[in-house]
Image (tube, rainbow, N blue to C red):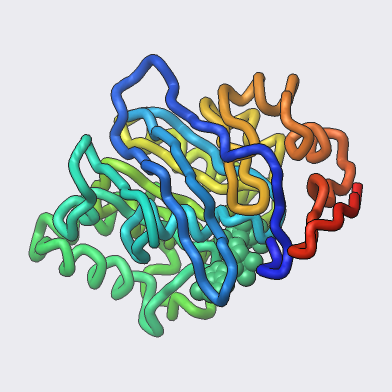
Length: 272
Ligand SMILES: Nc1ncnc2c1ncn2[C@@H]1O[C@H](COP(=O)(O)OP(=O)(O)OP(=O)(O)O)[C@@H](O)[C@H]1O
Ligand SMILES: [Mg+2]
């Protein structure tokens, strides 16, 4: 990330405002600072209703932070998140669900994890039991219902986290690297759940480092670098014919070390 001692005169954050499709969520000029650093800088993006939007970019670019801001878990220092054109409220947050980079599961059984999530949304009795059964079946976890969630394998935990989020019937699902460290079969299982959810109309916002996954799942791509939008567009535009140096470097497997870095004294030094 940027060091507070450096002023990086790089290109301003690109805007991402696709023309077609109704916006469900908009980040309007979002800036976030912590620990003396500007971690996100003037992020302007639009998430189209019903679309699958991928957030990509190197480690530390600000992807997880951006997700947490869009989900309303933290508030921006400047700018605003709009949900269906209105400022994001606690009520609107209930229309969203999030699968975190490291699955957050209760120290209880698989079943109890699902029960708890649905109870929080006010579901009880027969309706809840039915939903749990469907969720377990769609994740292939029926036989593990009574097992403590924390002893599941990484892939099983991620599947549980995804179906638990989906059981709450969100309009939009955020997924932060849901298949990192998973084998191809577990990855395919998660991707299937994501695609099925999207076919039912759930808007997907997913962080990934995996170009293959981006091409399989993505429609829109937002490429972050150093807390800014380096480039945004369709998957084929951004991954096949990138225009920005950060996205080009990523495609070519080169290390992108940033544009010119200028010290506060004003002396320029290039680190490329
Ligand atoms: N609360 C905080 N205080 C200070 N720095 C923070 C805070 N939260 C995040 N950061 C920093 O912000 C930067 C972006 O973090 P973030 O987790 O969004 O990166 P990321 O793009 O998701 O990276 P990765 O691909 O490794 O998951 C990192 O340098 C991180 O250390
Ligand atoms: Mg992250």
